[in-house]
Length: 365
Image 1: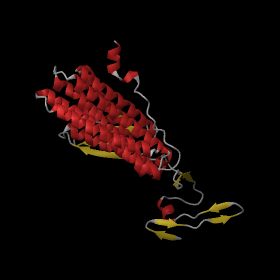
Image 2: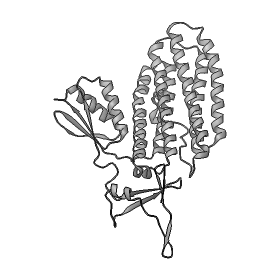
Image 3: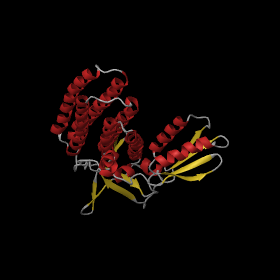
Image 4: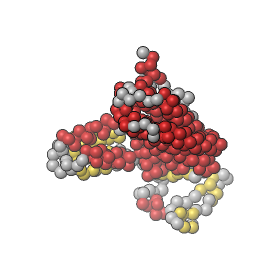
């Protein structure tokens, strides 16, 4: 046996005519309470490695996390703490207070459970609320989550610009509300990856390598940020009020919006196909949008009051969206060589579903 840096080396031995065997480290066997005759499971990985784990309860089964809070905690701080606990991936989450839990604290916990994917209230007492993750660590393939997030973000971008052009507060409000859907998908994906990093059995069920998990998590973060900028564009409706955007300036902003949306779609395709040429094209398009930004900014500088402020917000969000797409393209280039195995299906649809675009529904009526 050789041991170095925490790794244990074992020579492969051959027994009989065609059977190969490898011995197990004694400390590992004893630490898990195993003995002769127990069953071990092996899972081949796409990167050529193999995961071994003993026959036992389902990964994560019975793990309970107890969170002690106070009734005076800020509501946003409590919600953020619950999100962090959710991402940690414990199947059972018990939130407790010293003495009776206030109605205000319970309201935050219930709101959290309603907004997340998985947590349901299992039991309540005067001092505690217990949440159980009812969906498990891998109910939805990670590539499907990314694909769904892109559909939603693209629809939000389209509707945000429609609200901006028409100064339609109802469409703008709908865009803001849909941001929660993108957030909950991002948090769900982050929980999946965190759980997989902690438990090799969960990683095996994802059918992804660790570098792939990292790539998807970065892509999810990019999409979540772009959704935030769609919200910011929608919120300019209340800033602009009845101020009208000059037609030529509105056309240039539309051009930037379409360029940013196309860059995002192309970046996802380059990540899927490992196409470095397409990824570089996305980076080049971002430079072109920067030149257009300078031109638009010069025109905005001639405006005054709330019109100038609102247009500046829209311009900045469109520029940031394009740069986030560039970040994704850089990730695609970085991963093109090291990612191996079959291509990952991330190809986004050509257009968002009509059912998700209130602007189109309004136009059709």
